[in-house]
Image (cartoon, rainbow, N blue to C red; front, side):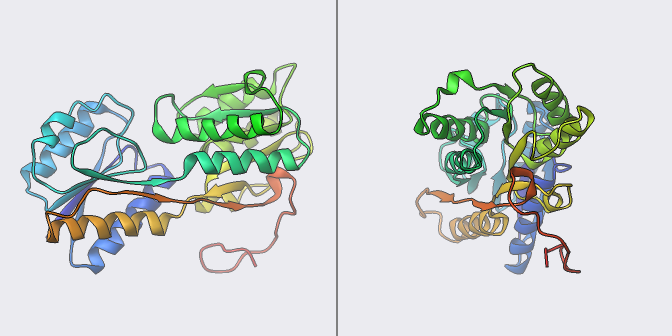
Length: 286
């Protein structure tokens, strides 16, 4: 018994960790997972989905790349159980398993406001992607609730990568009206931002505080360690696989929308105390 998983980029630690959880949960239930890496390309994404359908997988989990999703009509005509993970997509018959990105963006920004930061910029992901839209909405709502005009705060949209975060950080932090805090929409981007700040002679968090999003393992190994909104990898992966396998067993199972909350992990990059010391397993702080 098999199921397929298609992700935008398995070199991104977020998707790599999510894929590991999904594979482990599926394997424990007697299923093997076939993985397709779309590399952000719609044609490649469509090719993997067609290949998995041709192999008659029992079910399919898709983390869609950045549009236009030319394969939607083709997949909609299939009876195979399908689930969309981490993104919003108008795919008939598909359950969605999501993170509360808007709530996470709101909490991250509110935390920075609580540190007394006045000008909070945002380095976001590509426009039009569900996590980006919601995280930016949360950032804007937090600013508005604090009596600030979101239109006055700088925001830029770049891919979820270290190099992209670095370049965006260089531009935003070199501005004459640079922010004194940044909400960065992914840990990978934020790692690049930390390097940009160091090259510009800015101290984190003294000169610019940083709060990121995802909670990948590498976020606690930076200096200072990243404050981040941790996504519940285990819960996301487990609920996705459990629903898919239940749908395989019972085709009449109704479509659902399952949303998981994020958790603030406060570390040194925002101005909170930076824990020191690591446990030998998984790099957990002592």
